[in-house]
Image 1 (cartoon, rainbow, N blue to C red):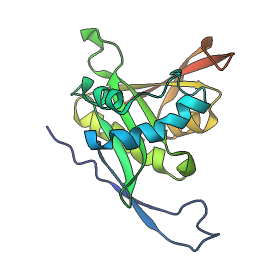
Image 2 (image 1 turned 90 degrees about the horizontal axis):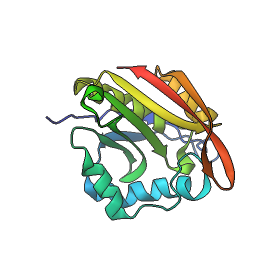
Image 3 (image 1 turned 90 degrees about the vertical axis):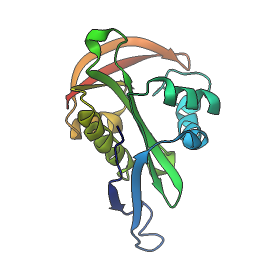
Image 4 (image 1 turned 180 degrees about the vertical axis):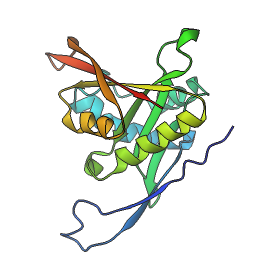
Length: 185
């Protein structure tokens, strides 16, 4: 089954008033293996400089591509503008046991210079719509706390906070809380 997730969003970059007011077209689409290097580039600063992921090493392009193909029923989307990848969102099994087959865990990462410009929201909206069409009923997101932009994004898209684990992750010599958000599709 193929999904056309090609929603188009016109949006103004944050610095448009400094340059010249201009509208650009951003499109979301299914990710392909040829997007692996760009996805890695988007993800790398989160691994290297933040506690938003608990990975310590940036995965290789091969590992990114392996992750993209590991669960064929689940989706990876990218947002692109002028042939540049601005971010990506994806889903994977919430748990491996059969009883969880209608539930997915989701995540979204946006290029650092495009945070707050609607990229994450467009990606997530299309991802959630496509997951619903594929028969999934619930999406769960894990958010390392504090992360107000991510919390707000999830809540705008219908997620509700359902759990808060204190000091559950450890990175950069500090303990990090993690919250779980849930959304019915």
